[in-house]
Image (tube, rainbow, N blue to C red):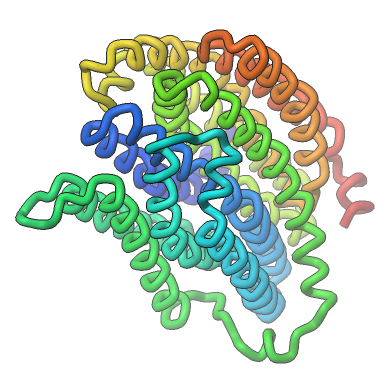
Length: 451
């Protein structure tokens, strides 16, 4: 039975995290929406493909790699009342993340042409995509650093400040999108280039705000002494958690990115329909992600206190609430899919709207299973088990999703609608496996041995 106090603690962490990620997702949503209204399916394909590539590598190495490790380690240190240890993990996490972020940003800037060609892009999609990726590569570097600073704050239970930052980032992005894409208020009409400038500017603004807050207000400070007196054992501890977590995200995101490349071969209409559906569904990810963050933090605290029953209670509470909210998204996808799709593209794009609506209705089926996967995975990571989510993701992404995508989409070249039946199967297997493995492994004696 759910306890009132437990629900309150979960919601106080999860809801700001949900709000934060919804708002960050809205950067992509508004970019896609505004360029879709401005330039139709070619513009949607350009921004969609470029953003997908950038977000994939950011997610693998930072958002679900270093950041998850930092949140888990900081949370457990706070639970054990060891502030110095938490600050050391924070400083070293930012150092590692900074090196990785620089490598990703430089690669995106220098090799964007080759990356887009490899993705199957052609003609105008490559021309505009190179422009978009080169400009946003500047912003993405600072966005990755901001992600790690936010992970530190979440580790000690502060999800409200990252939410505030995401509001600022969105206001800057939306305002500049409106000014620079369409040329309003006598600003130059820059189209896709304007969208890229808006995104990069907003991301840099978010980092600056977070850095100032961390220096002046955060309970956990980033201290240079932990970097100058670097202890390799702590680096290894961060990598020990982040590598399996990164591999989990890689197994999912790279398979999804390859699937995106396959879909590109179906043409810009099919790709635009898929991309708009993916963008809309991306918003529904956010409740699952928010409750996953809450599970990682709260389970980490309880494991640090050696309160295993409390950790288990928080994990189940996060899961139940997350499933309920994501099931509400299912209802919207089933009842008003055409209205949602039309918000992203001109009403004259009839074929894109029809295909996208069918895809979105199919996507409604996978929502509760997606919640199971994300939140049980987050609970396991909070307890220091990042290998189990990786193994499950490897099976569902590379043994199920990718072979089916390759055959039905790339070889047979059938309708993009089948993409969503395949992803539904993937999430069903992923969610059910993680639920079963969580029940089997989340036992006090198991975690005593593991820790």
